[in-house]
Length: 101
Image (tube, rainbow, N blue to C red):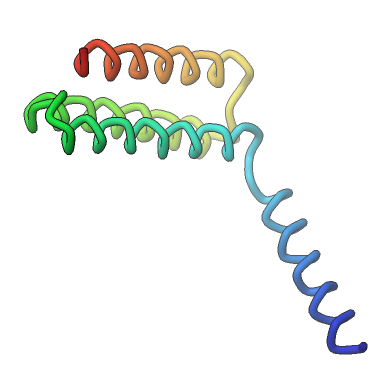
């Protein structure tokens, strides 16, 4: 019983610690990055994207991620900066769709 309680307490502490350590919107941003990368990879595998198109889309993804990291390093992001990143990710999502079709 003690072992179970200690394990649950340790797990809860880790979960809460990581939740408070991340900046607002970090999980959503990372999930979108993963989703867009998988869309690019699927397009490359099924032939709807050429290697050159995929490389260009990946380059754009890296640029957006780099910009978001730079904003986060400078005392976090403001709501306007988060909106700008969100807008750029929406544009990138449309680019992926248009390149695939």
